[in-house]
Amino acid sequence: MKGMPAPSPQTAAVIYNPINVDIDALRDAVTTAAADAGWNESIWLETSEDDPGQGATEKAKEHGVDLVIAAGGDGTVRAVAEALRGSDIPLALLPSGTGNLLARNLKLTLNDVPGSVIAAFTGDDRPIDLGVIDIERQDGSRDRHAYVVMAGMGLDAKMIKNTDDDLKAKAGWAAYVDAIVKSLRDPNELHLHFQLDDQKPKRATAHTLIVGNCGSLPANVLLLPDAVVDDGVLDILLMRPGGILGWIRVWAKIAWTNGVIRRTKTGRELAGEQKSDGDLDYRTGTRLVARLSRPEEIELDGDTFGEATAFNTWVEPGALTVRVPRS
Image 1 (cartoon, rainbow, N blue to C red):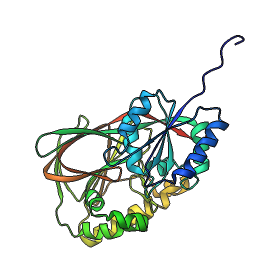
Image 2: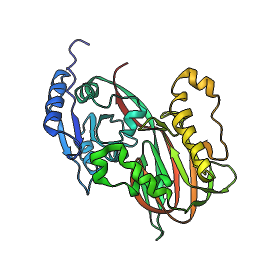
Image 3: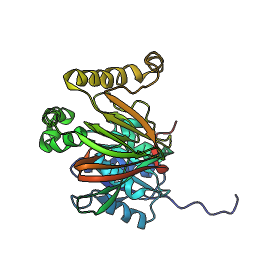
């Protein structure tokens, strides 16, 4: 409208993990893209061992930024998303590190930093769901966290705990192979009492429990083939194979049927409806409450979060806004 003042330039905050990024190249890319888009100079906030991203994000919010760019691995993305939960500030991803789990599930480019930076300043906003979990500890204390991809217990969490960080930095996803072998030697199973939404409480024994907001992992693994990041529900998997043949069936179903065949529309039609069997039990819901027979390792988005005796997790639809490339 004539006579109306021009809108003030917007400001982005870059929250980065110095271990995972080439900070000089990133500064150059962000400075150029921000200037080309007519934005102010960006605010730079570094994560640390004591603050993986929540504190830096709170500082960014205090500055009144219009966009938060997370440059780091899955831990950085999860921490920043946790602090942005329920806000209107969009999160842009600059994939870095080994997993890049959320970026994979959003089908973002993983190895194009300049392109990802441009998309951060020019892309569209997409609301996605967020998983929230209250973890109960052995001493009765509770702590709350958010996750963007999945929470896991059993073999899944043990594998992550057993992964050598130095080997992971050098060998990437291949480092998990050694961890899987170590975890499979553990004969202990999960014994849990759980309730999904308002259904009747049940007991279960399983090697692994996964609660997912989305289901694609590296190495072409589609763990939760029906999980959608913005469908308002959580996808739950109880994995309980019996013996070596059971593990072979599980691997064939996850790596081949889910990881290859279900990747295409034609393949999904050929594979048919996703069904539970004796090895893999799939469920969906908006809230899962569970209590374990003993303290068990728990992981969120690929990071270990210690031992839990119980948890209460639920989905918050559209609680996080993600900046994606313009369609």
